[in-house]
Image 1 (tube, rainbow, N blue to C red):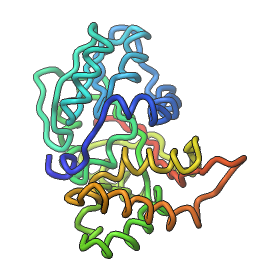
Image 2: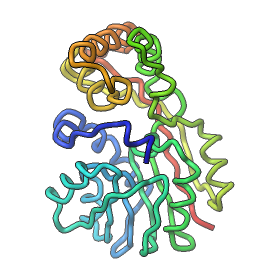
Image 3: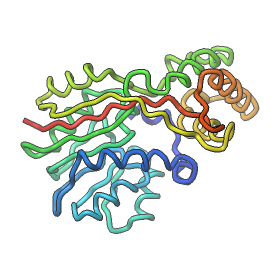
Image 4: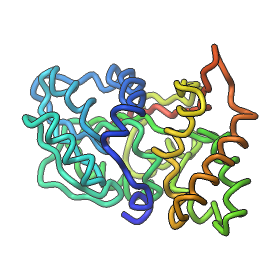
Length: 257
């Protein structure tokens, strides 16, 4: 998956410094409403925390992620759950699922049509697709900072941008076009705290901005990150001394017709 492979993932850093991704994703589990013995695919499962929560309810979960490092970590953490490396933009599995779930992953998959077609093919008739991911204007403060800073380092940020942040109309229309009935969808602001002051922002840039810094030497990479931070901090909201990333999420539940 070319678009996803531009991002390097560090499972240890992801769990210790970016654990808010899974914690904030727990709300979408209410929309999923997993049931005993259902077959559920967690698409873009990361290190497996939400897959484990779904499994704990009694569903039979398979976790899939493009990152082999993430899958290795997930298998180590949760050996009783099936995890596999797979391309979310183009996958075909032998099993058919009652539901496919995804949290904070679809915006890394720029071929949304490929994702939706693959999901549809992997669902049983009447199966549920429930997802939460970055919507239009998600982390726009960081995006604009990358676009401002990176040309100074000979990098075209538009070519490096690894994200797909659609409008709610764009995404629900795609679902309808490929054989889904959208039951509920919302696009909402979710300011997300990045604790530890400047360190928290740097952790975010390390964890999620890797594509923009690839190819830079260590010194230039650090300088570029600092410049992106300086650019972004002028616009980031601060609450009780903690920077708030300007997350905007889409949450959607649809059924395969």
